[in-house]
Length: 208
Image (cartoon, rainbow, N blue to C red):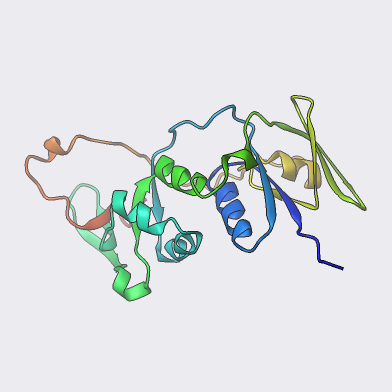
């Protein structure tokens, strides 16, 4: 008897959900992705992909395209915010790790991951309302009245995961007391100063 291909439902079409879908399809697993948003928007800001992450992107098949539009720093550099004093530098050239260190807009990464999937397997406007596990797999219910079935479900629906709350109960993030401030400035404000080839953090002592 031929072995049946597993059917996996992924809840959430963010970067984690799309990366999981692309990776599972690479090994021949059938995937359907369900996203509660009605459409994708260009939201978010800059994101770092360190060499280990870029090894994964290479396996998915999107690394070369991302390298064309991303900033590839030589190192991760921490400076004191007001004096510029270097506190720590971590070189991460591609020659050292076999994959680059890339900085890009979150939306560019999301678009690259989405491009690897057939559009018909990513379903938007699907807010999950129920999960029911039985001997035949898992049944999913959505707010629009539709249902779906799968052999297993992957929760990729973020920090306020509805799947997690259904399985383990209500939960909320724990604030660890660390706060990062983000701002964007026009490069003309540097009065000709050089930004350099490093991704730089400016903190009171060790960077934030």
